[in-house]
Length: 433
Image 1 (cartoon, helix red, strand yellow):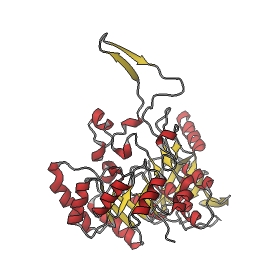
Image 2 (cartoon, rainbow, N blue to C red):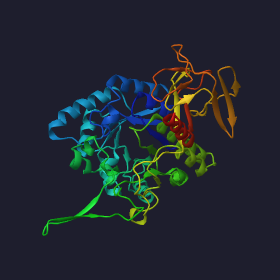
Image 3 (cartoon, rainbow, N blue to C red):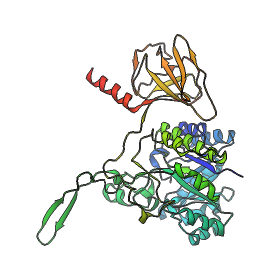
Image 4 (cartoon, one colour):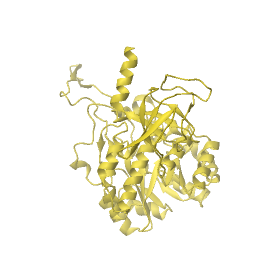
């Protein structure tokens, strides 16, 4: 049995490497040109993106290039040039949204497989067949589709690969086809510059043109005003059901603009969920515990196993985003010899070590640190904090760009973290000092 693919976001070269280290089979991303994530795309230029593809291929992993915005007539020649440049880098697929761009890519780069973006909103066999006949090899179905409809498409077109989102932000509109941001700020979501206006709090008014009076509508206490704020998708508890269906070829994580911590922890959680299913050892609580360490808008299992009209818990009415259970304290470098601070850390502090997939560390104690293991997790206590420039610290603060020497070499891109309550307590002490 061929395992389903785990596909993770790559907002820049570092995140690409982290995604692969934490268990992704493939990543997706691009430069900003004609991608729906302009902010993350700016972190890749052509050279670093080419390096990313080479890095992934050297490890037997895949990279899918996003060209998934919608062109204006004035941009058609620019699209042609861009697709030709991307094809030279030899990505494993091009992710596109527009039928016209599908045809363009097939003409310019016939050797590169085409994956149809979720922006195309495919939810039924009829549309799937049209795109398959155009030469699309994989469809990233709309977030609003049901698993039963995926099964129907796969039965009718068994050679068509299906990819679904399993984790990350949900949009107020059909798979991102939204104009709220364009209306309010001029930032066009379908051109890659969404301002996330749906996450804002709103006050609601009723206006009578006949009397020219306006009344502010009071919200029900406890409901709030985040009327368009969808909870984040979290399908980890359903990975066994998804894979048991046998019709899903790729499980995709949203989040090219999110943090390295998010990329690492979420990818690792779904890596374990997939591997555990095939090993006959699936346990949803294990994966949910890790996923809840990340910042989120509340979690929902969205629409894959329940239809939209059957749901009443997919919106977060009271907040835009909430803390997870943990805070990142530091991120280890690629060579494993240093780390950079992401949250105030002092001599004597003890933080958890979050390891990439397939590696481990040993318990040790020396003059500079102590590493212990408790309940399957590793922790490190710092006895010294010294930078590569020889500067010693009692405490090092978030955002400090000094590379701090690790007392013992750790696996590349290891994450250091602490509980959110401890992190907030440290911040409170700092403010009161």
